[in-house]
Length: 437
Picture 1 (spheres, rainbow, N blue to C red):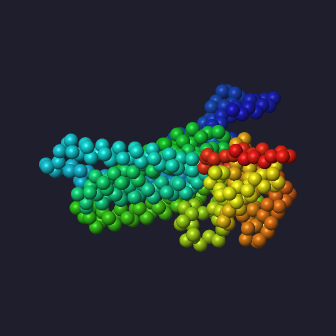
Picture 2 (cartoon, rainbow, N blue to C red):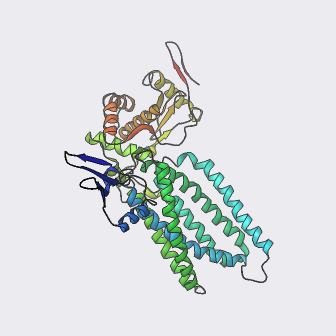
């Protein structure tokens, strides 16, 4: 509420809006010559704003990152195509179970559905066990993989009527595939919500996304039922519709992920930033790095036309000491007593790759520093340099400057998003002993 005063009159203005940049005047109250209230704006405008507040975070757009809108648009489009295809695949699945046939039994259909759900639950647990710690560091890639697995799951449901003798096996495969989707999509969505939240409003963003998803679900189900009705009894039309929507779904999901400009440091983004800094002395912005990073798995990135070298794949973080042979252990002992006396990590070259052994008392800052050091060393391998001395010299001269420039450019430098480091070591360097536990 804003008040302006003079010797003759007082005017009180009423303003409405959750963001300081989106305030609008709704009423003006004057006391001279008589008390009067003059309302501003139409009722339709006020109603539209109230409806919009149910779907966008409070304080929008200043309360979210610039990439929020573009990501949500593509994400809702890909979600819409998913709900439409779900109706087609569910129709095929129910037909295969025997819905509508006199020969089908309730207990038989129930048991088949039970096996389908059970295998999906077990698949989700196994996927979480093997990949749970890797989802944060590769949120973009796993977001794509999650939707690809969902597409495969729906494809299994659609083809299940074609293989009556292997029906249970096919639908269980589809259920396992979708269980991967549930885990990966939920985990990566949580990471992205934290990225979007500029004002500690992750809960609000998540709630408003739920409203958006609800509308997309209702529209998709309505369109899906209409499409299922039109294509009933026409197998070729069903397959054409399904495959066309699947292609659009993957394209929309790729575009949604490509819109993201994450400012957290994962192995790939660290490698891109460090390589550019070593060449030019400048640090790229999150938006620039997002256009350069590979969002497909490593095996698929080799087909990409991008020329960004994936140096980070030559770095192994958290190597187990007992996995090294005797010669490598001797070298490691030598490095522990020479190059890395004050460091909380050890580096060594092994068959063209850089291995990192972390100290048991290392912190998140030490992990980030070790990874950057290893990338600097990997960048020198092909140049036939003296790896340890030259990489250490570079770190001594430029590491602090690099970190400061990262902070100025908007990067989060508190930690490296990487899989959990399970194997660590302890070394004691003294005048007469060198020991690694």
